[in-house]
Length: 141
Image (cartoon, rainbow, N blue to C red):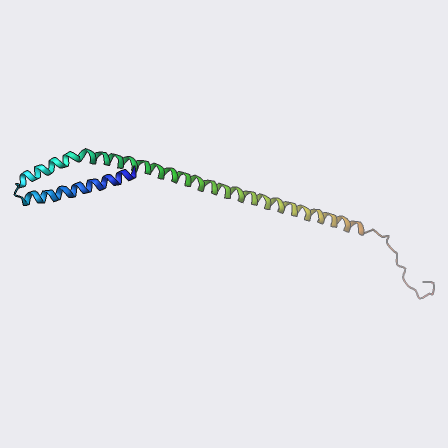
């Protein structure tokens, strides 16, 4: 259809040029300006339905192109939204993994600390008190 519209436009342009050339020739051959204007008007009226159809087709084509452009824009927007959602889900997954790893590491540290405290308490045995006898200089002391 686009090719037909281009060809129609070319035909209309050629007809318009030919009418202008014939108009000049008629004036050169002595035809009155009034008759030339009427002749030009009649000729343009003769192919005006063709021009109107071409304009209709052009309008239809531009409407279809706009619809295609709108659809492409919508698809691009949806693809962008899906990419953004994917990135958001990936970030959330990474944050979840980070916090789980952090929690597990803190839990391991707390368990080690508890083990160390338990081991430290076990190594401190309570010894009996020794009574120190004052030294009086005797060999038995």
